[in-house]
Length: 97
Image 1 (cartoon, rainbow, N blue to C red):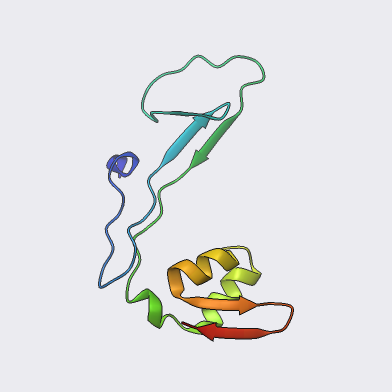
Image 2 (cartoon, helix red, strand yellow):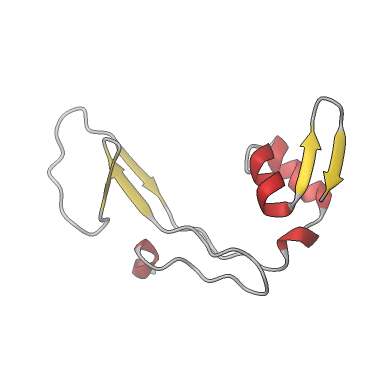
């Protein structure tokens, strides 16, 4: 949907809204539906919109949070701030706030 550049996907039942589509040309955010003349050496980054989340974040299954952190989909900081889970990978400790 073309509106995902300005309006993120909605959440449902306590989840988070999705991310908006983002286009960067040489580290400068640009509107995705405007024409641009590219110069040699310009770098284009396109981050597509993400879907909205579902359900209470504080009730997410711990194993899924750990798996996402290990696979690089989430960070330790996100696990703590979003899901309320403290993970100490070195000591293999997991604590839900």
